[in-house]
Image (cartoon, rainbow, N blue to C red; front, side):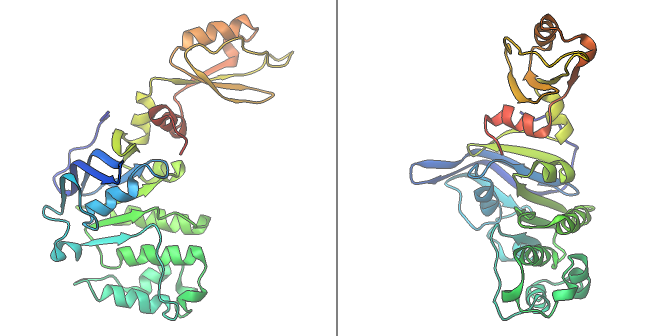
Length: 304
């Protein structure tokens, strides 16, 4: 389900009908994906949905069994193309005796026009540990350093696999600010996550992956509005407890507390009637679009 997108002139990355099988398991099953200049595309899916395999094939780190992959208009395995792309793997580690300054200087030497190392250390909150051995860095500091390595070459496309993992609040904010800066002009960002807040905060376009295929894509708002269900919140009457609902037709109870019931349903009128029959007036019934998390569950049948 493609919900909408802005027209882009530069295609940085494209997968068409990509299939990848490990043993008897289809990890990617007809995966289609495009990333255009000036946009942040977020692959959203539960663990094991195929997100990492998708970006590995997009970067030329793995070969598709079927379908086609291109990076900056040519083969992802081209050395010249890889100099124009930055990437951070889901798990990244560094030589224990090198420090962040040395790591970034080493990585920057592979690019023709790298960014200034000192500025990157400052941007990612690593200036205080710039000379500390990587073996003594925390998990969050290593994650920030990995992302700094992905952007030090001033890439046309930055590919980030779970970049927010292990980051504290300050680190996440720094990451989000950097992602927005990278996706400027004809440059773009492709990142994977199962963090709904991160997806909603960063994405121009979210691609929901389920069982190795894209099942929906659009902005967070577009995905929520296109949901077949609505979020119905039932509040208790002012003079009594919230009564039991005898049924939830064509829907499900998302949560129930002492002061409200939250229901997802495509049949709002029926829920209204059931609620009113149990003593809840129309003024105590609130109807909104579902959250991104609730939409994700509807699309995939899985929690993130």
